[in-house]
Length: 306
Image (cartoon, rainbow, N blue to C red; front, side, top):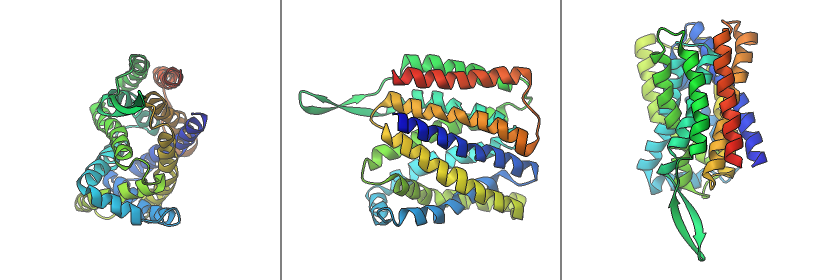
């Protein structure tokens, strides 16, 4: 559990680059559709290079051939419906605001638990038991929700930030868990992420076509920054986080704790806002909201590991 927790925190640091660089691209006039699609289109060759020496891509294609419909569905959910709304929201809020609101995913992770089963041994036989929603986890999640609500009070267009992020917050853990359930131990983390990126590629191509139609080609600076997001958040952070969740995938409460480590993105995003973007700093009320979000994350992790 300690190793998984450390990997989760490390992933939150690299995930913070998503919020900081996406905000930077929006402030520079880049369109959110290019920020989203370019990241995953750049990720594909990177992940291919990582997957080749780690068991090859043959097993990935065999797994996809077994149930291509589910691979495409949960890849688009876990990557497409997660990241496209997140990029859209970044056009209407500061990086730390989007990062803090994104912590709704902790609540989403707890609420989606009943969709999955855990196999336990009963009299020497493996029995599938449907997971339950942890009342303790929900209680801690309410603290996070209170913090998120405080952060939205000053926004006149809060729904443009909240609604897309709520969709993303449910899509990410749902897609990740469904793919772990589908692949089991037959694929490594590298192979699973590569397969999901490959299966979501048609979605990113269509989004890129839409972006070209409404905003034209992406500026050169946005291409470079999207490449950096693909490397830091897309490859490094995703692999760290997926590895962390794989280590505890058989314990739904520890899995919720690892997902809660992503609240560290809030602190890293605030630092990025100060030292990289020089954008508006959080107000006193915002700091209270940020404190509640991070406190909820810590309490949720402690409660889940007991």
